[in-house]
Amino acid sequence: MAATVEIVTRLSGVDAVKTGLGSITTGLTGIGSAATSVGRALSIGITAPLVALGTLAAHAFIQQEAAISGLNAALKTSQGAVGLTSQQIIKMSAELQKASTFGGDAIIRMQTRLLSFKNISGETFERASRAALDLAARMGEDLATAAFKLGRALEDPELGLQMLRRSGVIFTDSQKLVIEGLVETGRLVEAQAMVL
Image (cartoon, rainbow, N blue to C red; front, side):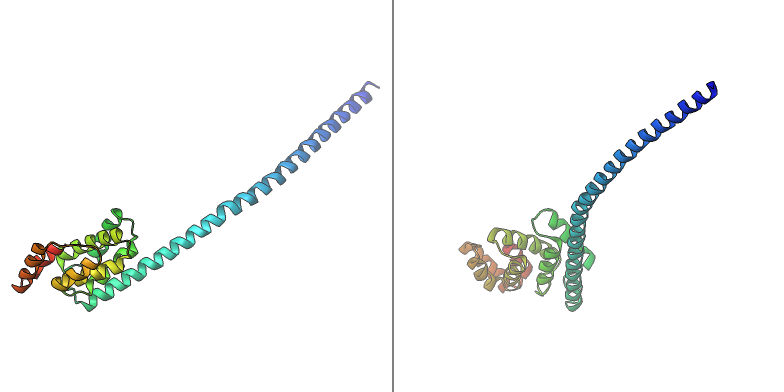
């Protein structure tokens, strides 16, 4: 009879363990459901912004590539008259971007606009790029408009001074006379340097 009691006690212990495990299983199922709900919410909260970020990055890449394509076309059309390569201009635009509020693609488009003016090259091109950024920021204009005004002023300094004056850039009478004298004596680069 002692053996019979011992077996019953062991069986009732197994039942208690089963009941305990059942309670644990029920609790874990509840935690699992809650974790699934939290996971869904986090997935939506994290995935949606990541998708949006990816879309913005793709758009920015497309804009940058379009700007570089325009730059390369302008360099080819001008037959390299500016004296700089595409890579040098892109590097310059990256440096200019660090010191301004304008994006790299906008700066490259501005520089492409400057390439349409035949008398702007070398150091004058770099200085004109910086000046166009300053003019656009000061006047609240887009870079292409500022580049056009500045390019016109550098292409024909006498006429360009009038255009710049309408934009709020004022030259003294003595500066105008010096610039006109430099243009008349064929010293365009020096006249451009005074404009810049």
